[in-house]
Length: 149
Image 1 (cartoon, rainbow, N blue to C red):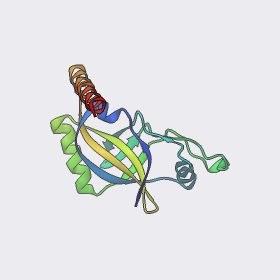
Image 2: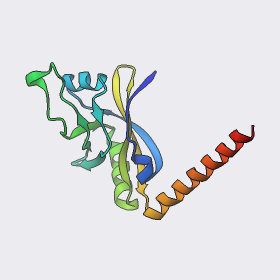
Image 3: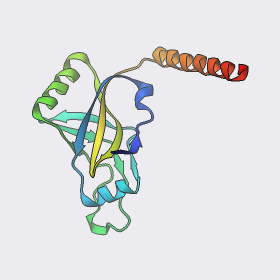
Image 4: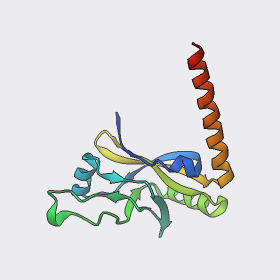
């Protein structure tokens, strides 16, 4: 059973997502408690690979109120739990095809926090306009069909 905690609202707007995968994330106790309260923001996050390890940058987990001295920096780099072969596969994709790794959502899978990561290429401005025009056309069609019935 999955319970979604946070979604990245700008990810699918700014990137065309080719594929997705799941990764675990290394967190401390107070960060988990803060996530359970829903105090996490992944709007401007991305994944980098350095020294053979994957890290999420820009994820904001607000400090836990009762955490006092055990609270960590809210914007610190957090390590992702992936197999070495997966890390090398995605590193190769980043270097060869110029794609980005973007966290799409954070959710609980049983009692563990998981991150859904998308492999995506950045959209140009005209691609964004095209998508908006398609959505607008579909919305008009739905509205017309609703009014006719």
